[in-house]
Length: 487
Image (cartoon, rainbow, N blue to C red; front, side, top):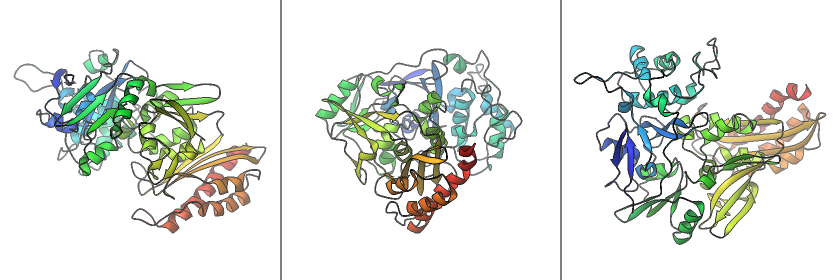
């Protein structure tokens, strides 16, 4: 047994006597840090946002905003957390603390009314404020891009934060007004040092346990001995089960910091992506190197969720409406599955066997995702949902098409939301391959695509609408790419 502790706003704080399922949100509030709020308990509103020190992409440490309502406190054993209270300076004795620059901008620009959501907005905004090279990568110096400020601020950083009062404009104004951290800023200086190393955790209370082993081999041995154990990474799915459905695990095993699951390798014939890398880490490390994944990332939940969610988790749940499976099916990805006896590689097209079922055996987990090279040049990810961002898809369609000399040499199409599992549109692929990339071919293949899968009617969409959207997606792809392909 180890004494599990979290450094909160610079002060080490023991986790005990919290139960292993206790969220970071409840852990903080029980210690008087009530700026962290509970709004939805599902990771959709962002009122619970806090900053965590994580391995950086451009600097040793990144300040990453996460949903405190989803992450078990035990998962942050040995880690550093900063809350909205911790952003402010200490101030002189007897005087209020100085406001952090993002707090100052929110105040002077009227970004807060009732104030319930404000601390979460401030933490998400602070994560973007501290993002290295933010101004150097600014997309809208002339202010014409609605999603980026002239200061390089990416509004997707706030896509997981909801506000019912302000109408968002003053919040956006505050985001677009923040400058860059000064050299004296302690949180900016902290980025130059390595983040806390992962620590082995063996935390138990009231008959349940939270375990984090140092190596993959040790973890797989635990899974062999405890086939009932729940594997958690970002906890963006399991956290909802705990909060909304009161699910409890006798044993939870964390894999998010295992080095063997956090590698990203680009070789001549394959890209291997560790199953425990967060979507944000993958996005920033690939930096557009896989265009179809680059189209997926902004449409996958919110930045807060992408800061914790992993490909291994999204595939492991086996949901037919997960956003990554259609994309990875179109990329002809395979999965590396590992257990205590060794590894095996399974094509993703053969992985799903039924609703939330797969070929993964008890005690086996996803170690990595492999994407073969070269990539098809014509790609698109169409997510049909009621909201543009941060929503569950009614239908998701991913295309990867190779057109040479006007002929479709290869077509791979992944579908989500139209069957009990994510599926390949095999009949449509066959209808495209070997034919001219023409309007007539697109219309013929679109009719075939409308019949793929077994779409059902539910509260998100009717089966007829889903079928219609499948066909429209292919027509849209052709219309958008004809000029690019011909040139």
